[in-house]
Every structure is written in C-alpha cells, then in structure tokens.
Image 1: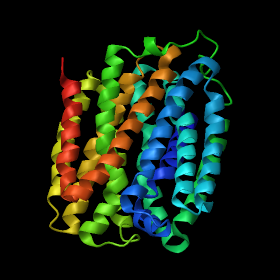
Image 2: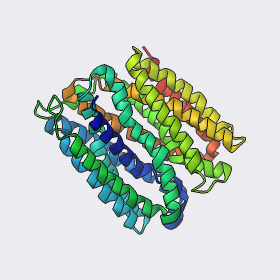
Image 3: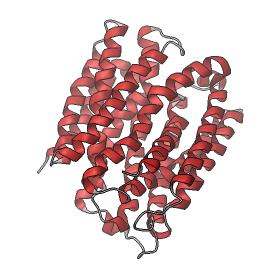
Image 4: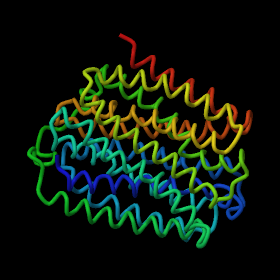
Length: 378
C-alpha cells in the first residue's frame, strides 16, 4: 500500500471537504452577516458543487492525457487563495463568487487523487486504499466541523475560512512530496487521448447514477445536520460540536468497514445496494423520531455508519476500468457526486422550508431506495 500517498490524499480530501462543510455550523451567522436568508446561504454549497463537478470532469480527462501530478500540486494552493477571498468578501455575491472558484480548484484535484491511488494499488486493495482517502471527508466531520464550531465561536466564520486556507496549503505540500516518485504507469499521461464516450459505458453510467443517489443522502446530513440539531434541540453553534463528533466517528468507522467489505465480498454493487436499503431505514429513524438529544445523537451515529459503508464499494467498482481512462471515470464520479450535493443542498432547503426537518426522513429514504434499486437490478 502506498501509505505516504494515502496519508497525503486523506489530508487533501480533508482540506477540500473542510472548504465547504465547515460552513455548516455558521449558516445562520452567515445569513445575518451577509443580510441574506438561510436557504440562500445553504445554496452556496450548490454553487460549490456545480463548479466542483465541472472542474472534476475536465481535470480527470486532463490527468489521463497530461499526467496527474500538476493537478495534485496546483489545486490545493488555488483553493487556499479562494478561501482567503471568502474571508475578505463583504457581500453575499462576492462570497458566492469565491466559493464557486474554490469549488473549481477543489474539483481539480479530488478525483485525480483517487485515480493516482488506484494506479498504485491492485484491485483487491483498492477498496481499502480509496476508503482511507475518503476517510478525509469523515475526518472533516470528526475534527474539522467541531473544531470550526469552536474556533468560530471566537473568530467567526471568516476566521474559520482563513484557517482552512492554511490546511489547503499544507495539503498541496504533502501531495508534492508524496508524488515525487511517479506511479508505475508514469502517473498518467503520455498515452492516447482518452475518449469520454468510450469511458462512459453502460455499467459505468449505472454506477455513477448510484453515486448521485448516495451523495444526496450523505450531503443532506453534511449540510444540514448541525442546523437540524440547533433547530430541533435548541443547541448553540458551540453546542453542536459533541454531537457532530459522534456523527463523524460513525462515518469514519463506516468508511473503514466499507473498505474492508469492498475488498473481501465478491459483489461490490450488491453490497452497495443492501447498505443503501439499511440507510433508508436509518434516515427515517434519525429525522422522524426526536424525543431527546441522546436519541438523536445515537440515530445520527447509526445513519453515518451505515451510509459510509456504501461509498468505498462504489469507488472500488468504478476503479476497475482501464488505467488510461481511470482519471476520466473517477473525475466523472466526482462530477456526479457534485450533482448529488447540489440536489441535497437545493432540494433540502426546499424540503425544510415546506415540511420542516421531519420531511428529511422520507426525502433521504427515497433517494436511498432509488440507488439500491439501480444497484440490485440485474
């Protein structure tokens, strides 16, 4: 296992995820500061998702043609610059511009990390390898969001963005050092021009559609869980830190289990489908039964654990494509995931406005069952 690359990739994924997810405890504060509404501030994640998705498919195809290292080394510093821009912006639309540019920079290296890790591992190690990199998203919830909530209580949401910019700069340095020695295939590039049409086969498109459904379910909680806790149980921004810690621990544990399952069970697609069915039940429990904070925190842990098992199975299945189009396919995966994030942020805002947080359970369960149907269909 290429542990140096996996550690750098995990940290880079942590920095990229933190660039958006750490805003979750401050949606209400940002809305007041920017003289905007909660749905509009929540939809900043939608702007990030769109640019992240567009950039990912371009970077994935570019990495197959020109090599992966330029994207890995230059993307994080670009993200850092954009985060500083967010911190200095005065109005809502200036913030929207900078978060859109930040999403473009983040998309330039997140999918490419997956392709580089896949190129350096054999098939039956990829579930675990990609699971370790994706654990960076879980670490964002475990460390990043609670720490952001604590830091933000002292320096505000603008100071949190500056701190996250520092993480992005460190991520660029770590990736630079971890990729000094190229992969066995040369780290991408040097071959024939990859064909997007050739890469997007029927099975790949089906897997990408499954990924959209799963990302809606994950993105719904990543964007709104802190606000859900505040609205349901009257917690402050600092008060959500411990529940978010428990939620994130469940997600990390689920990601580790998912990596093991993806490498040990023969049918990754079927495992993904069964896991999403279980996540549908967990979503109904989380958002539909809130008698006390302790029950909500336990249900959040269960939901995070179950939904996290699915992702490594999907990623390992996507990485089975030939290496000369792997960057394109995994870049498209990030693009499809961005569509899921967009739906979660935009539709989630509409659901909470119309039905309250009680509507989140059926909403998440419906998307989970849709993804399960695609996975289990023969």
